[in-house]
Amino acid sequence: MVNLHAAPSGASNDRRPAILEPLPRGFLWGVSTSAYQVEGATRADGRGASIWDGYCREPGRIANGDTGDEACDHYHRYREDIGAMRQIGVGAYRFSVAWPRVLPTGRGSANEAGLAFYDRLVDGLLEAGIEPWLCLYHWDLPQALQELGGWANRDVVGWFSDYALLVAGRLGDRVKRFATFNEPAVFTLFGYSLGWHPPATNDPESLYAAVHHVNLAHGAAVDVLRAGVAAASIGVIHNMQPSRPLRQVPADRKAATILDDVWNRAFPDPQILGEYPASLRDGIDPHRREGDMERIRRQIDWLGINHYSPIYAKAEGASPLGFAWADAPADVARSPIGWQVDPAAFRDVLLDAHDRYGLPLYVTENGAGAVEKPDVSGEIHDVERIDYLARYLEALGEAVALGADVRGYFVWSLLDNFEWGAGYQNRFGLVYVDYPTQRRTLKASARWYAATIKAVAERVAS
Ligand code: GCO
Image 1: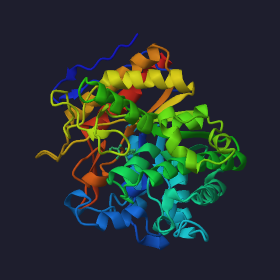
Image 2: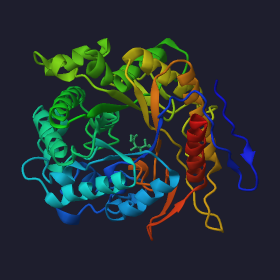
Image 3: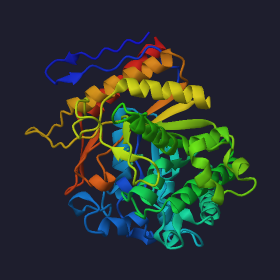
C-alpha cells in the first residue's frame, strides 16, 4: 500500500523523500517546460513572430508588462539546464518546439538555425541519458498564421501536419516520444472566448471552429508521426480538472456540467472515443465534414494529463456558452498563489481518466506556484511546494494502488519561467531563475525531488 514518509527532517526543514510503494517498475520521473515560457531569444537566428510576442505588448495583458522576449534564455543556456536535470536525476524532459522558430511564417521555408537548436538540445539530452519528450504545440502559433484566421481557419490542419512532418523528419531519428498538443482546451477557450489568451476574440462560432480544427490537426499529426518516425510513441496532453458548481444550486450544477464538457471532454472524447460530448454537437456541426470523426480518432499510445486543482463554474445568463468561470469558494486550502490544493481531486482525475480512456497515463504537469525569493544565505526553502508535491505524489500512489495505469510523472516546471498572464511574478520552478543575471539556483524542492527519485529507484531495486 501507499507509504509516504514525509515527516519534516532536521534543520533544513525539507521533507523526506516520498517513498511510493505501488509504482510500477520503470516509472518515469521528469520535468516539463514549454518553448515560449523558457527559450527567450525571440528575435535570434531567424525566429518568426508568435501570437504571444504581439499579445504581450498589448497594454494590460500581462502582469508588469512582462514578455517572453528573454524568459530564461534557455535557447542559449540549455546545456546548463540539462546539467540541472542531471543533478535532479530525471529520466525525461518534456519541452515544446516553437513552430515560428522552425517555420518563421508557419509554412513554407524552414529555418535551419531554428532546427539546429532543437538538434543541439536533443543531442545534449541524449548524451545526459535523459529522454526527450517533444510536444509540437504549446500555444505559440506563428503570427502569420493568425493573420489568416489561426485555428478558426480549416487550412490550419494542413499547416500543422506539414509542420509535424518537418519536425518528424528532422528529429525523429532521435526523438521517439511525441505529443501533438498541450492543453488545447486552454488555448481555445481562453483565446476564442474568454479573452485571456491571444487572439483574445469572443465569438462562439470561431471557438467551435477552433476546437474542431485542433482536433483534426491532432489526427493529421498522429498520422504523419506514425508514418514518419520508426518506433514512435505518440500521445496528447490534456488538462483535466474536476469541474464543480460554485454553489449547490441547479443552475450552477448545470453550468459546471457544460464547463466539464468544454474543458475536460471536448478534445480527449473525439480523439480517443470518436465522439464529441452531446452539449457541443450543435456548435461543432456546421464545421464538421464527412469523415472528420475518423480523421480525429487515431490510435495513440498514451495520454498526458496536466493537473493542478479543481475548477468552478457558475450560471450566467449572458454567457453564450452557458457558464461563467468562477473562483474557488473562499474556504478552500490554497497554494501560495491562491490555487486550490486538493490531492484527492488529482487521485480521482487519474482514476476517471483510466476508466474512461483506457490508455497508459503520464502526468505531464503538476506543481505549485509561489512568489518567492532567496533568503539571506541565497537558499530557496520552498517548503510549501515540497508539501504540495509530496501530497500530490501520495494521491498518485493511491490512484495506482486502486488500478490506474500511471507510468510517469513530470513536475511543472524545471525552471521558474514566463507564466502567461501572470508574467514572471508566479514561480513554478524546481530551479530558481534570477532573471536579471539568469543565474540558476536549485531550490529545496529540487533536492527533495532528487531524493524522492533516488529513494523510489532504490526501493524498486531492493
Ligand atoms: C499549462 C501550461 C503551463 C503553465 C502551468 C502553470 O499547460 O497550463 O502548460 O504552460 O505554465 O500550467 O500554470
